[in-house]
Amino acid sequence: MLLEDKTAIVHGAAGAIGSAVARAYAREGAQVHLTGRTEAALNQVAQRIRRDGGTAHVAQLDVLDRPAVDRHAAAVADSAGGIDVCFNATSNDDVQGAQLVDMQFNDFLRPVTKSVTAQFTIATAVARHMAPRGSGVILVMAGGREAIPQLGGSHVAWAALAGLCRQLAAELGPHGIRVAWLLSPGSPGPDETGAHDGDTTASKVHDADTDGLLLHRRPSYDDVANIAVFAASHWARTMTATEINFTAGAVVD
Image 1 (cartoon, rainbow, N blue to C red):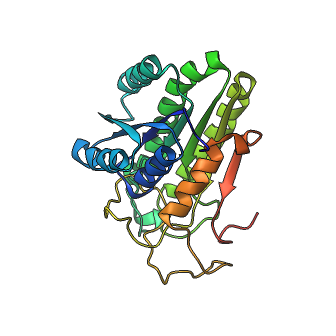
Image 2: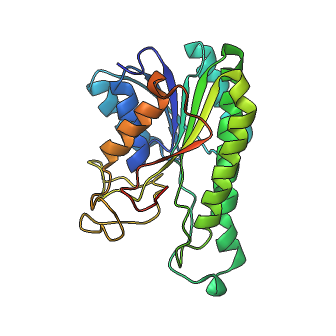
């Protein structure tokens, strides 16, 4: 098991990506702490993890509420003896489908403010508990580098998020903490729960939508989760301040 005896927090764990990542972390031996805005949906994910033999804890949490996020991180660290992994799969509440000239500024700015605020709040909360132990991994779902029409503020939000992750990596690296962001082209269809809350992918896609991909195959939610396991594990111990690109060639490095 790649994450045996690890403690992981997954924010946005009721969503398609967050729930898949939480299940994969539990499958690989981690004790998983699930947070999100809807407790009933979180409980469904936790029940599935427990049914499969894993350990899951649930907390209803607003990631924009810094004191609440700090309290949650402290409680997890106190109960588990530390925090090893934190995965941010929260949504940015963007508005897509309109040209910038036709958008209200508040609609443009909302995803920028929310994504940066959430990641800053989440990362700094767990880093305070990771640093004294000399290790930890902080991961977040991000978005593409290319400018695409009618994405609203999402492109700017993703660029800001990457910049924040680079700075976090630079400051936390001396404490043994790795920071990386994951880039997906979007996954084909809902997971088995049909949940989408917390899905931060660039677009809502269908199975046949592979235009612009070199491999003509989008990653499934299980693919995303398995990459998140790798990124959190000792196999990726020298990877930090980096984007993990699994866009099937939609974004060419």
